[in-house]
Image (cartoon, rainbow, N blue to C red; front, top):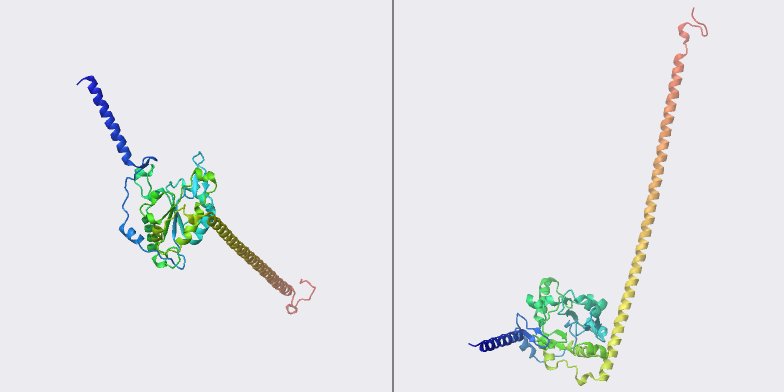
Length: 371
């Protein structure tokens, strides 16, 4: 083999290796453009029971049920800037949207960020209402392979995990189950709604996800994003569905629908603002009632304290009076004792003097000494 042939052969081998590596790398990606890896654990198939349940005919209820709403954070409720501070920007109309959800649904968060990164995002999105969330799930709740946990990988939000966790809690509280109580309702595909900006994350339960456009820099700078207003209107129908998965299969959320025209959006915004003001008013009235109760409790406490002080003071006075009486009795007793001693001493002296006087029977003449 000549030197030229050898070089050509090595070049072919290098090209084959490069091609092989590129092919291998591409095969591990779920999305080559974003370089998002395919999960090592794979993607399971949609369960037949889910498919069959979603084929049911939708039935509208006369009264709203209390669905479980699972919220994504980044890209759905907030926009996190790609700067040093990672500034978090809440989506327009978020506060009014959350007020509606908290009043009509059971609400939780499931984000693909790590537990260490979620606090700032939660504060920006929910402010003081974080405590009203049913639970907060993060990256650790995806059951990822250890290699996938620390790299950019497709994170599937398998709702079976959520239903399993809630059912385990129900079983642990079986003796205390009551209607409308926290553990009194079973959740499944008929009453669970996931709100996310990515359809890929919901592919295991595709008919339970409201997919909304991502809240990114462009939408943030446009300042006219009304997606949460549209979702709020769509939720009005969902809360009255016996099987939300069956309804969403036939009538999925469509942000571009003519149903969400300008007049409809304006009306819904006014409704959301009014509802938010009502919630604020109710909360203020509740706070005022709580404050009055605290003031009343404080007054009762002060009265009880003053009464206790009076009783204590009276007890002290009684003790002091009794002590004086004891001292007086003691002094009187001592005086009587001294008086008896004095009388006894006087009597003793008098007897002694009588014994010293001469008697007439001894033959002596008083005043004369014997010879």
